[in-house]
Amino acid sequence: MIDLRSDTVTKPTDAMRQAMASAEVGDDVYGEDPTIRRLEQLAAEMTGKEAALFVTSGTQGNLVAIAAQVKPGEEVIAEAESHIFYYEAAGVATVAGAQIRQVVGTRGVLQPQAVGRAVRPNDIHQPRTALVSIENTHNRAGGTVTPENVLREIQTVAHAAGAKVHMDGARLFNAAVATNTSAKDIADAVDTVQFCLSKGLGAPVGSIVAGSQSFIDDARQWRKRLGGGLRQAGILAAAGILALTQMVDRLAEDHANAQTLALLLANMTGISVDLATVQTNIVIADVAGTGRPVDEFVLRLREEGVLASAFGAAAVRFVTHKDVSKDDVLRAADIVARVAAGR
Image (cartoon, rainbow, N blue to C red; front, side, top):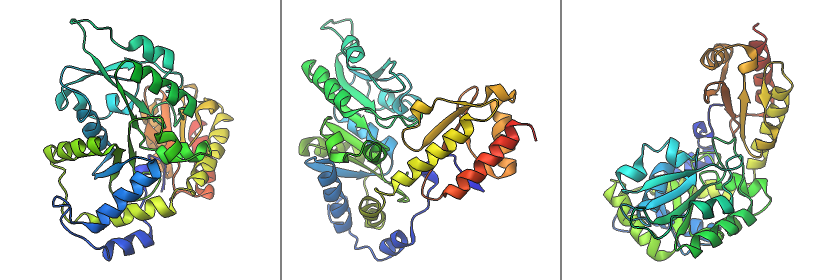
């Protein structure tokens, strides 16, 4: 089975498993897990932030980051189809007590002028704009990257309004590799950042939140409130260290495989792909032209040996990752072609 549903399905490497088995551990709630501390220090250095915090997931990371910076009754500006709006169970509203204001971006990229227009005036009838959240790369837009100059312009607009900027950088390192820059350069354009270790980087569990020391102190308390206090979590951190030191550069292979797949799909009858969105490791294909309902299309792919995700009324999402080779991608494309042709 060729699994292209998500890069969350990646398996830890043998080196990660060995590191996990031999990891030095302690109670992290007491601040005594040395491997957690090493991971957090490494993550802070790689993002250029004062401090970092290991959390169990990207969703938890975004929630503690937002809750630590936004008061109940305030507002978070986010792209209209952002992950925090679509896929995080309304945590911002139910836990942080804030609301999300959706702003439509260009292929998922927020535009500084639109952010400026969305900032609330000083009016007792309206919530205060406390935070701008940027998703980079943007999942529902097809893995698109927010350019660094756009990030800096948004930061300028937000700071002028007294608001902070958070980045949901679940695939931050995909963005860095795609733009031939560093995670540090990207993160420098925002106040706080969250990134996942468990997607393309291949670790089995975990994400990182990074920012100022005072922010991390608040985020740590929020993590505790949410039941995220960790004990001998160095077992997980050991894999995270290898994810950051051994798995970043190889993301370029995933991007190349996504490009190959996208081009093949775009040339199939009944399937269309916006190739401008294929910037990293996600390909979204519109299959409406095949005449098959998307759920049926995905089911037929499964029956033929390819796992993919229905992504809206007529779209299918394919995500490349370390456990999918170029040969796998070519075989998957052949299967998609057969299914699209009704064979």
